[in-house]
Image 1 (cartoon, helix red, strand yellow):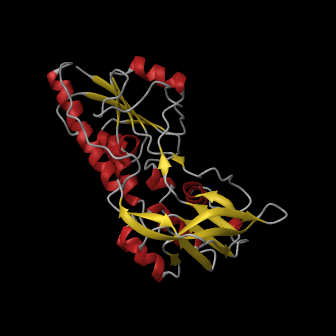
Image 2 (tube, one colour):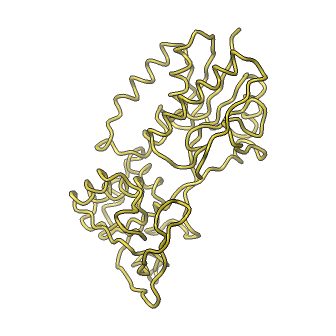
Image 3 (cartoon, one colour):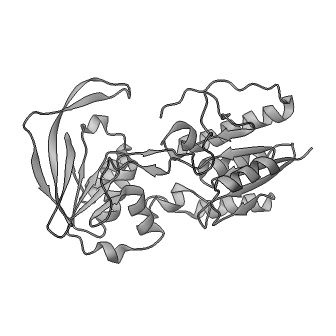
Length: 317
């Protein structure tokens, strides 16, 4: 019996799931829906070509098309369409990533930009010329998105500094990316945290107010906690601030009642959640493993029937 599967999101978790399912002996009709124009998710929209050439995405796409997978690009799945997918497919798999950027209440514009938005503007919209007007950029954050922002900006702007509240040892970015940043001329201000973004009389960024930090006891993340040093505020000049301070997941565009559980099943019948949408922001490798894991779970559910129970999964979000 053919099982119809709708995958929302053509990123590494979504397309890996499809790759694994088409290898099986079971009969699946797989449709992948994505708001962008190509396969890859954050690989396509956020990771610069110099760091990760995208030829493998074309190979993955062609392989899936040859296997009968149908792609629906430039398609934003809203609540109405999500209900239709629930009605028309046996399983709906949500692989939308962690798409909402943290800004800590700071408004974007006039020299303030969220990290993933910056990368989208540079990688997809090719707005490099627009950023050449800036002279001194600060990237706020310590993950791989921050590294990508800094490495992209230093190709446009001579003076780029990463501001990170912990030390090198706690920095979540990969060591290779940190070294690449430093080699390319990016400065890193460890044990500093932005408290405020300063504007001139025209509303444009003219600097940031920064507090010095010190490390303390271990926190829930398994890293040393950090605390603001009393009376340590100082100012750093800049005219551009890129905020790469994390992302979160928002399911409300799909369904107000959609939530994660302790397995890849969701609070809605026959709706699965995978990848960063399930785990919170992680690596491409993690998303690929998510796709492989859920393929095995769907296979088991297919073979064993409705009584199949998934094992709980430890998540960090």
